Image (cartoon, rainbow, N blue to C red; front, top):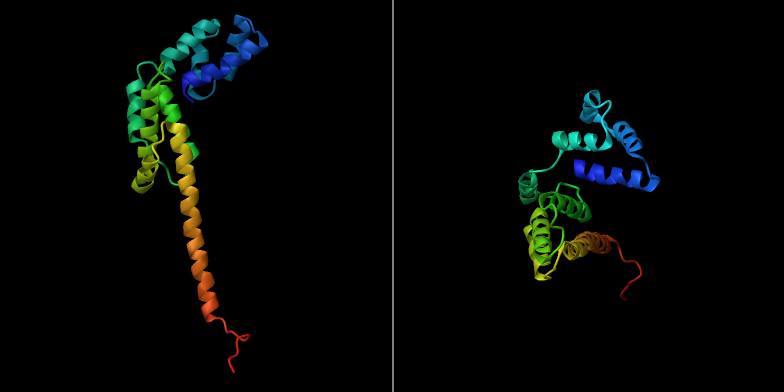
Length: 178
């Protein structure tokens, strides 16, 4: 998880439970894992706000948008990765790449095109582009449909060949010509 995602998820609890600043600090300290626990040694008496500032300085995503745009540009679908998982990767990288700009037609076009390129399948990309999807969600739906069709056709073809081969090689006792 990126720090921003962690903080957003964490802030739901204090809001819902109406925690005080000291409660938030205690629960935040308790939630830190891995290398972030190193922050605890120098933050024994820190307020919630001070802890957030220290986390941001050490692990924050500010000024890293270009890094995430590069990741988005070079993103490729991994073996066994579903279309939905790939679309979620694109959404995550878009959010991190273009902080504060999460809407608009240009944002949708960039997300859609990043997804289509990341499919890493020129034939599939071409077929989806022919459908002229307007955004990432629509492109994902079209990709899912094409993959189901492709899988059905390929598995059905193999099954038909096996069925036809069996029919030709089996003796036909019922048809006797006199």
